[in-house]
Image (cartoon, rainbow, N blue to C red; front, top):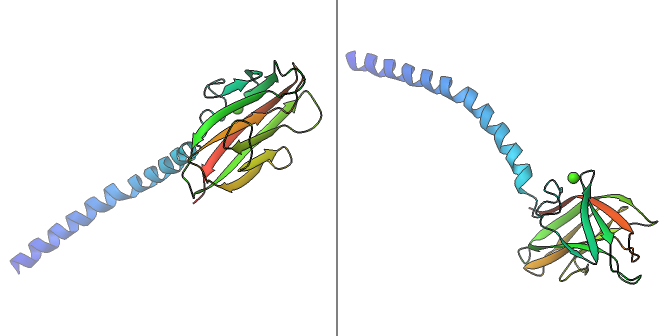
Amino acid sequence: MHRLNVYAASAIISCGLLSCAGEPGAGDSEGETSTTGDEVDNLIENGDFDLGTQGWTPTLAVLSVVDGALRVETQGGDGGQPGLATQAVALEVGARYRISASFGPASYEGSSQIRVGSDINLGEFASIFLDTPSAEFEATAASVVVTCNNVAADDGEFADFDDVVLVRLP
Ligand SMILES: [Ca+2]
C-alpha cells in the first residue's frame, strides 16, 4: 500500500508540470515558424528592392528605385539594344521552380519582361510579362541568369519591376 501511494503522487505531479509548460509554448512556436518561412523561400537577392539596386547588375541601363520598385532606364542602347538588369542565381538541376514578379509603369506602350535563361537576356527556361506574371520551369543548369528587360532601345525609356520571386517547388 505504501509504494502505490508514492507512485500515484509522483504521477500527479508530472502531469501537472506537463500541462502547465506545454500549452502556451506550443502556440508561440507555431506563429514564429510560419513567419520566417515566407522570407527564406525567395532565391532572388533583394527582389523587393528594399535594399536599393543591391544584387542587380545593369547592362546598357541606369538602375534606380522609384516608389519601392526597380526602374531600368535604357542608356547607351543606341536605338538597337534595350536596357537590362540581371542577377545570377544558383539552382539544382532537375528541380522545379517558379518565377513571378509585378510589372510597374513603363515609359512606352507594350509590356516589359523578365527572362530566366543560361545567359544575360536569354529566356529559354521562362519568360514572364504583365499579362502572364508567373511561370514554372525545370532547371537543366546549375546556374541561371534572371534578366529584367525594359524592351525599349531608345535612351531614356524605362520600365519598373517589383517583387521578383524565384522559389523552388516541392
Ligand atoms: Ca518593392
